[in-house]
Amino acid sequence: MQMPSEATQDVWIRLNCAQRRVKASIEAALREAGFPCLDWYGVLLHLKRDENGRLSPREIERGLLFEQYNLSRLLDRMETEGLVRRIPYPGDKRRQLVEITERGRDLQKRMWPVYGAAIDRFVGSQFADTETEQLASLLGRL
Amino acid sequence: MQMPSEATQDVWIRLNCAQRRVKASIEAALREAGFPCLDWYGVLLHLKRDENGRLSPREIERGLLFEQYNLSRLLDRMETEGLVRRIPYPGDKRRQLVEITERGRDLQKRMWPVYGAAIDRFVGSQFADTETEQLASLLGRL
DNA sequence: TCTATATCGATGCACTTGCATTGAAATACT
DNA sequence: AGTATTTCAATGCAAGTGCATCGATATAGA
Image 1 (cartoon, helix red, strand yellow):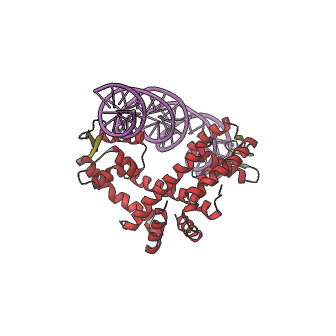
Image 2 (image 1 turned 30 degrees about the horizontal axis):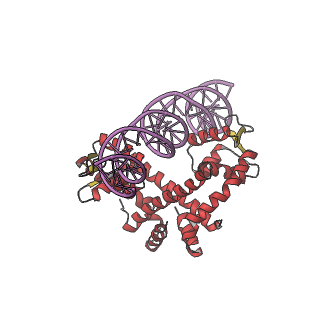
Image 3 (image 1 turned 120 degrees about the vertical axis):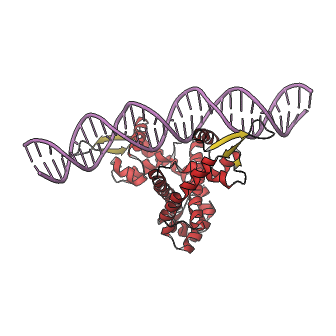
């Protein structure tokens, strides 16, 4: 059993702290502006990027690292708010497609300025350009 | 309102994904071995590192980024399992000290081999030494 | 000293998550 | 074709979390 070096432990601890801190800051900014949390934004953006604005739940789960049951219930809530709608999947009655609504597109559009500004404030502003690229590349390996 | 560059967005997305992936992998390893989750380990280690094995809840919250009410209830559970014990804070009846028990020390000791191996496997093994240091240093700025 | 304010930890309540399982439908196997 | 296995989404239940607030105590200010 190979044990981790001090530096490796450091990476893990800081990865954790950094993510939690940044996430908390960004969520706070969204909440302050009266918007729903990041999960909702993630789903909306993911759907919006699809050319038809439709994806299967599985695609969303995989893209955004959701658990199946969590996404199922998140979609319930979003559907209640009229942000997405579930439609039948052609040729497979087990499956479904999730489609973003106009209301959903609109919310995503209104959230981005607040979200983007927060990302820049809590992440971007800490690094020079080359560092940002470096960091992105290193994180990409995890 | 300054908006984030593509690279900055990448950092944020990957920071999120990386942390979630690694955390899920490590938690799975712990669970597989029949151990409690990372939060518990964090508290035990934090206490163990104190020379008397005692800290106030506030110190733990700040050190490990817990919410006050979450820690309060986590300590309930850990106390029920006999891993920590709450004792009065000398000179301030509002406060308390949390003390690690022998059982708590023992659990921490038994968890470390599994936890450490998981850290090395899911973090350490991905990077060369210089990269590890670089990454730790960059993450430290967040 | 006496009152207002602040800090500490706990808790009620609603909401969210994790886990296991279900029921329905598709696919694989013989 | 007929049965077993797999895949998909939903859900009951237990556990955990977020938010607001409480009661107790300590500190600050008049």
